[in-house]
Length: 147
Image 1: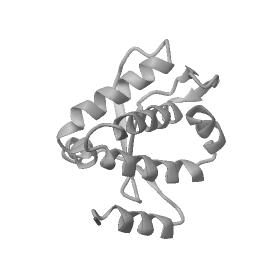
Image 2: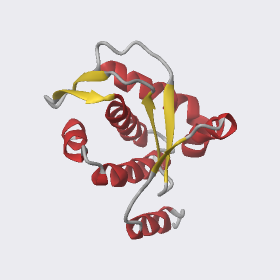
Image 3: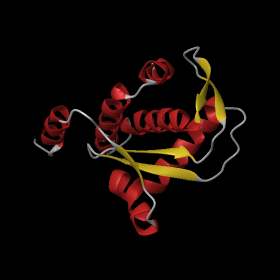
């Protein structure tokens, strides 16, 4: 059964530089989560928050920025200049930027939700985000947290 995911992955492989663009338009921002998660958009949002809370004892909420990726992907990150001290179950323990913390939390959420009913869309979102992570300067750090 071809659900279009294979074609999206092929297009993604052709793209060399994946660009992240912060979403600043309020109307566009309202569409970001439904575009990725459909009717489960609230579940995705709360799962990302919960993932960061699970790996960062000092995280206590706040405004998050949304980022669209040029390969169709998406992630969200706390709108903060602070460092986040992450302690993950895989023995990763480091201070990371708010942006890296958001990428990590979003990736964790995608992975978690990919095992649920209808999880294929989260699996695709995870692969799109992973392709973006691979080209970042802090890729080794982020993949160490995700490993």
